[in-house]
Image (cartoon, rainbow, N blue to C red; front, side):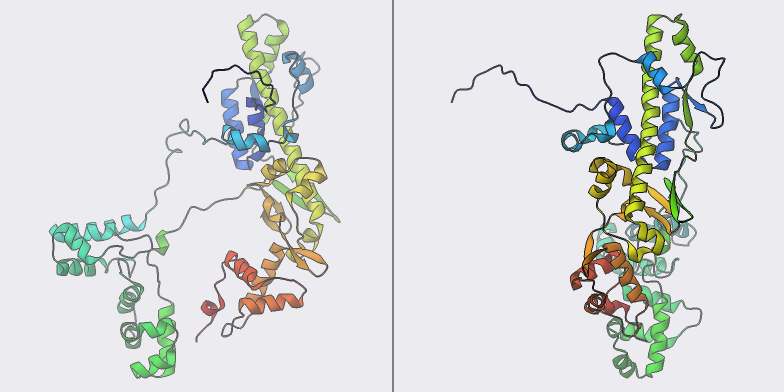
Length: 476
């Protein structure tokens, strides 16, 4: 078939996202702290915007200008361009193709004070070991070997390279590497640069404040039996009593299996609630968090310029453009706050039993239920509830927490979070010497008419960070 060049005329419908709509969606999905940052950036970029005082009136009788959005829109309106109700548009088809167009960008901190722009200095395990090496008496070739060892210590504190490889890299003997490794293993934290768990615990046993011969003997000669909890066999092999074996095992259980753990701490993430829910009498009140959010208003000076008509055409066009942007921003903020408020009120309506009685009464809920209740699209509810937190009389929760899958409970359904809470309660009340298995938990829940499979119990237990029964069992 021959290739031909043809011209075709087609009429298609395509959703085009304007910069104003992109901005509105950004504001909708921002949490409280991100919202404050976005508004601070807008105040820098748009000279029309000013920060108002919450107690001052928006208009004065003696002024021919005011901050009524309806009148301001008439001043800068462009005929033939109707506004879209941006929060009720189904963006799903658009997002599949153009989703990256409106994703939040990283904030630019280049304009901050240099001192405020500096990251805090944190000592990690690598730096800590280097500091000790600098103050040690390890010199010459031994220092090069020590540097090679320290550079191959993992975040958990273990040596991640074979002695033979270090010797080959530095053209030294294995004995030299072993000798320097023993020096590095004397550094703090105790047990660092160990090659396995047994060596790590043995080093810590040698540096006990009160030496215990049974502890060191157990680690060196019966560590494999200790790992599987064969205390009777350990006692016979080491020719000590069962009580002495248990006492040595208790001491070992207090050792640190990961020497680098103190240096593995992550940054603390602080949560600023976007919504507050208060109980007033028998009802609940919703308050959207405005703390720290500037109250934006249109500059009176630029309004005067539009009123008196003395500005040149280019200046007037600039003012109108910036004022349209400012008006859209203020409307977007108001719409965002209303949407968050309506969504939270709807969640309280569906989850009233949770707020009254606790987590055991949390009900199954999906985004579509709330979307239908407040007559908005599911995608809007998804953005509203993502990365936003609500402060309630029951604690602080992410809005997504209230949306759960349902598990059969008699003739009704119960939320998965409620089932997790019951699993956690069962494990807390178990006998440490005879912990309940996943099958026993499933059988226990079935007595409460909660139909759940053993593998589902195991999945929820893992999500709660609870180890299996074999690892929860107390041997002594």
